[in-house]
Length: 346
Image (cartoon, rainbow, N blue to C red):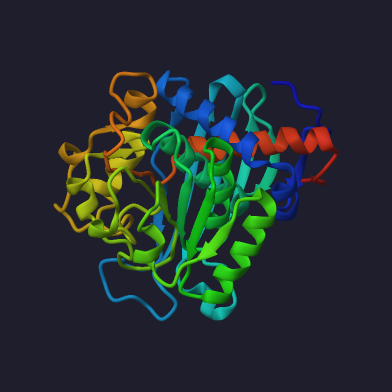
């Protein structure tokens, strides 16, 4: 892919504000769909994140939460681009007026190996998380789904609502957050952005009672959505696995689907069990999973939703390819718009 860039040592820096302005929910969803397809076709090289645990997550939680720094590398052959996301996660950072998650995406030209861009990775992560959840919902939720429940009204709650609105005929959004003021702000913003009425529920059980699609996007350290509250026919988007969703959903529902086995088995039965995803060792295994989106359901090897009363759930921790592909898109959009700031690195 050609790039209208400057000298070989110059890199385009794209800020969070610019990412939010450039990257529409529709463009992000389109790129996420492409990425899942490319993964299924074998056109992507990626590894599980390299996890550097600052604190032992199997031990007592320190005052400001367990810390982890992660590297997410991927090569996207159809784009002639590679990228790595450098992410840090400290759950309790807001108590010291710092973000819980921060990230940077470095995008590289695979024709030359030269760096192209340094993109705010937090906004890309927020957007592609809403994007990959929507990809899963397109295959697992009822096509006519009109009532959306958002549990957790932060940045990812926002991206989930906006992106799902691109794919489904939403008529109502019901929101819940433990901070009522945040839920009210979310309702005002999403209502104004989409034209879809948004109401604030008093608790999680009420919020999901009649939902077609339920998104759980919280920082809670334990489940806030219980299996028994999920109505027949509903689909659950579990953005952080079973950390804040009842693990009983995996076996009680008709289908538990993951995004891509290569990423998700690590926290289900691999090296990340007990550290990421909220599962105890041995609680669940690959045998409990119906299929994955990238290599089985999207290519048609396994079905998605099969009837209107199925309860389905998708968990996906986010594969590096999504960050790489969306960050690459942001770079292209910034070039088109004349956005970003060029810096000379070498």
